Amino acid sequence: MSTPDGDAAATDGFGLPGVPDAFDRLWNPHRMAYINAGPDQVKDEHTCPFCAAPHRTDEESLIVHRGRTAFVILNLFPYNPGHLLICPYRHVPMYTDITAEETAEMAELAQTAMLALEGASRPKGFNLGMNQGVAGGAGIAAHLHQHVVPRWTGDGNFLPIIAHTKNMSQTLGQTRDLLVAAWPAAAAELTARRRRDAGAEPDDAPDAPDAPGDATPAAAPQGDVR
Ligand SMILES: [Zn+2]
Image (cartoon, rainbow, N blue to C red; front, side):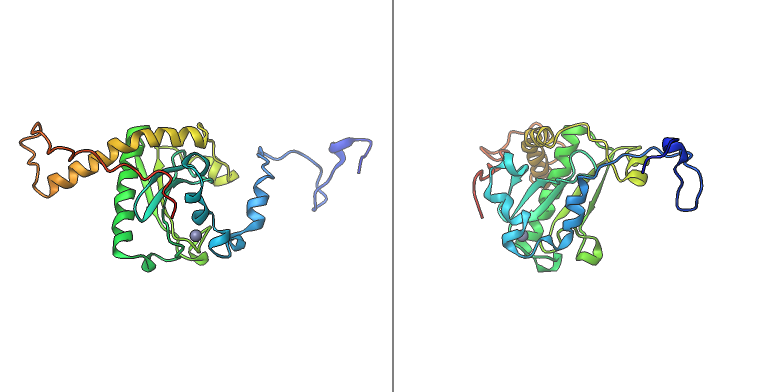
């Protein structure tokens, strides 16, 4: 309703005059499509984005790495640039539902993801976690996924806390390219650490030649749809 005095004559619900308050506001109504759909949008395997993702190309799905039983994908709703999710291929909801092999590979992929992020963007810390069930805060509770969130000092500024808004300095495609490039070195580093831990490669002989083919991480089965 227009008035002769315009906004200056507007009042709020308490009848107070329309004096601007101290807050700036960032309007992002496009988020309502996601918020309104809510956690119930995933009914089964056929409506599950984590089941659908491996059936598309890595670029389309923003997949960083495909393992044997689990894969690594960028979160479409990142808390920080490089926010990754480790997902088993199987549509199971709980951490207690996965096999020993899946458990071991998800742990290995989370460690490799941390090393790849360190190589790509030098974070100062990480958050690793799994939200279990809708009550536990899982956005897609039906399909297990582990978050790997890189952190930098001061990244928790007022925007995400007050405005539920994150400032992103890269597109998701750019972030994926960086992490794909960093992944082989991260996988090789993890393999080297494992071998040192097992005593196969003593720390006092760092220049010892590797066994043929030993240091080369297995190639990702690109296009291997499960
Ligand atoms: Zn699924």
